[in-house]
Every structure is written in structure tokens, then in C-alpha cells.
Length: 220
Ligand code: GAR
Image (cartoon, rainbow, N blue to C red):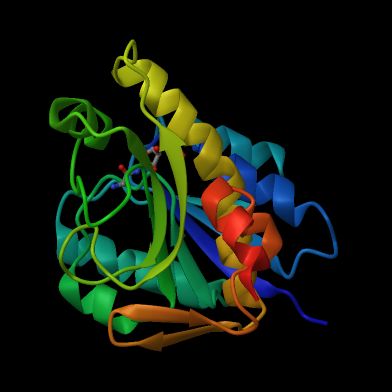
């Protein structure tokens, strides 16, 4: 069966991109990464894409509308069906967001709607929460909003600083993002207002990222 064609937008390190590349290395994974776009030429993620033999495009364009037009052209030329934002740190033009409505996802290192925007780990520490985590969601015009596909929870420890918390969340991101993209690729997501309904329920591998959910999944 044809795999879903995914275009990934990055700005930096690209460790989430790497997690998607690694998942797609399995031919049984229902999606493949066909294009990586970066707004920064020095993004480390570009090297990861090169190593995996994936087409790359640098669009170092400060104007949001010009960036969107160039990205749109590249995505269309590569036959991209789903856009995955992976550490893409620029605001997207609203018409681009609308054009990809329900076909563009993002990962964010907090349990949205808590702590959107920059430095979510710092925000979590400042708020004193005991748990944080990461969220994969469909993208809407307002930053870090949109119907939530899946979340993974991690504890916040008393001796955490931003780096240690970010590292714990990042490890969860690397597991969650490929699983969430797989659900999309399998056509199992239905959006109802702000909610995302997963056909067949949340699969055990995502539930396992959240121990309480895993416990509750025996409830029948
Ligand atoms: C990740 O933690 C991702 O969730 C975050 O940037 C990091 C990128 O790391 N994204 C956002 O904050 C978007 N609002 P990576 O380049 O190694 O994947």
C-alpha cells in the first residue's frame, strides 16, 4: 500500500525529525518523509535528512508570505499529503495554515493548552506543576492551538532545571510523534470541533506512555 507522503518543517536540531525518519525506516510504517524544509541553513536537522537521503529545501526567507509561497510550491512538487512541524520556530502565514487545515500537525513540549509559545519548560517550572509532557496537535492559526491528537505525561522533579526537564520531555516526544503520525496515516483520526476522535480508541503503545491511562484501559 502507498505510504502517506510527509513533509517536515524544521528550524534546528531535528531530533523529532530523526524519530520520524527512524520510524519510517520500517517499511511497515504507513508514512514516509519525502521532503524536509528548513528556514535556517545551519539547522542540524538538514544533515539528518541528507544522511537519510531525503530531499531538502532551505527557505531562508524572513517575509512570512514569501516563505509560505515557496514552501507551498516545494510541498506540492513533492506530493506532500501531511505537513509535520518538528521544532519549526517561526510563525506561519494564516493562509498557509488554512490551506493545510487538518493536514498539518505540530509537536509542542508541554501539555497544551498549558504553556504555549516559547520556553514551555521554563514556564512549567515557574508554575510549579508536578507533571508536564508533550502534545501532538493539528495546527490552527493561533500559536500552539488546535485539536489535540495525543499527549504524553512526564513528572517534574524537585531538582529539575530547564535542561533536565526538557530532556525528559524530549524523550517522550520522540516516542509520541511517530505514533501520532501513524494514527493520521492510518486514517484513524476524526476531528469534531476541538476534539480528535481516534477510531478504535487510543492504541496501547500510546496509552503505555501514560501509565494511568494504561491502567485504566482495562476498564472495558
Ligand atoms: C522540541 O522540543 C519541540 O517540541 C519544540 O522544539 C524542540 C525541537 O527539537 N517545539 C516547539 O517548542 C514548538 N512550539 P528538535 O529540533 O530536536 O526536534
